[in-house]
Structures are given as C-alpha cells and as structure tokens.
Image (cartoon, rainbow, N blue to C red; front, side, top):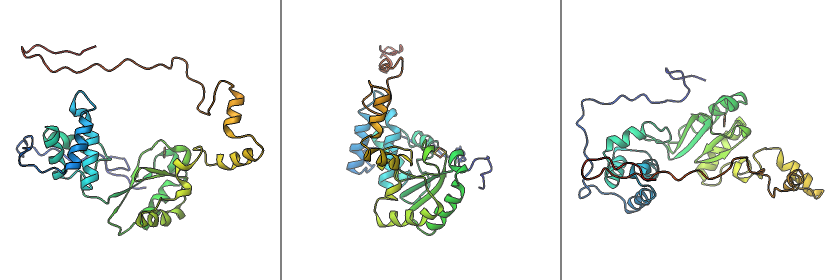
Length: 259
Ligand code: FES
C-alpha cells in the first residue's frame, strides 16, 4: 500500500497557514445568510455547553451535512452563528480528518487499513472498493486508521454504518447498494449482529434449538448478571461533575472555576 511522504497511509495535515491573508472577522449576522435548519441545529448544540466553542465539532459536522464539505461558505455560516472567526473553525476542520476541507462525494466509505484489518486483506479490499467506485462522484472512498471494530476485520464504515468481515468480492455489491439507496451489505452490518463475533449467530441458533441461548449461558456462569455485559467493575462509579466556566469578572480579576 503506497504511503504519503510523511510515512502514513492517510493524508494527514499538510496545509500551511497563509501568513499573507488578512485576519478574518466574525461574520456579520446582518449580511450572512444561514439556512434556518442549520442555524437551529448549531444553536441547539451550543445550548448544551457552558462554553459555546465546545459545540464546534457537531456544528461543523452539521454544516458538512448541508454543504457536503466544510467549504468556505460553510465555515462562514457556522462562524456567524457561533460568533467565532472562520479562521478558528478552519483550524479545527483541518485537524479532524472526518471534516472534509475539499469537495468530496457525499457518501463516505472508510476502509480500515490498520494492523488487524491489514493482516486480514484490507489492502486488497481497498483496491477493489476503489475500483468499484471509480467514476462515481458521489462516493468518497478512503483508507482509514483503526475504527475500533477489529473483531470484524477487514471492515469498512459506509456513511457511519460498520460492515465486516468483508471480502474483495463484496466491493461491487457495496457500491451498488449505496447507489441504489438501500442498506449496504445488510447481512454484514455490525449493528444487525447479536454479537460482534461473526461465529456467534450460528452458535446461538444451535444453542437456541436446544433451549440454551447465549445470555442463558452467561447468566449460568454469573447468576447475578442478567445480560452478557458482565458484572460491574470494581470502583465503577460516576465521576465528579465538570466545573462551570465563568467569564472574567468585570473588574479584571479572574472569574475562576466554579465547583
Ligand atoms: S484495525 Fe481495522 S478496525 Fe481496528
């Protein structure tokens, strides 16, 4: 699998700041048009946090859903609603690689090429998916680092839906499902499994036929446990509430953190 010059197989951060440009101001709400639904969603995200900047990621994700990517216009609209500069948002958008800073297809296919998936054939899978989606402007296929689903390796995320274990032969069906607007590789969706382990369904069916389901067996081993999630860990307890941020006092002294 070819690597970028910095050694990784994903593009990474490689856009230097333009030191010649004038600093951009917070967009004027009187002259910046923002779609009503987008404005409402951003306002709802901001309302969840004491510091509105905590809502930058979901706000940018919302704008990306509207515009297809974090375009200059999308940044302008988010900046206007959040009373931030577009430069602040650009710094965030260029750091997080699920926020797109170039135009891409609206359907995201992330093929994991990290170690577990790689050892199970992810590189060949990626090639096949790319070939199957060649010429489809609306599909954005890219390699991705571990998505935390190594037990269904090799796997991919299709618009956020995890599918796996995949074979190169699944690539054509994956692309056809996206284009047809139907659930992608339905039988291989992680969310539709009773367990991430691909072998469990058959095992469960056999156990079910003999009157012994998966949960029943887990319960037998741990009589106090009603599900397969396992007993509480020692020391499990809610943590302390996060401190409330207070704005600086009017007399110039620090407002500090509330308790
Ligand atoms: S290595 Fe692919 S999901 Fe972890």
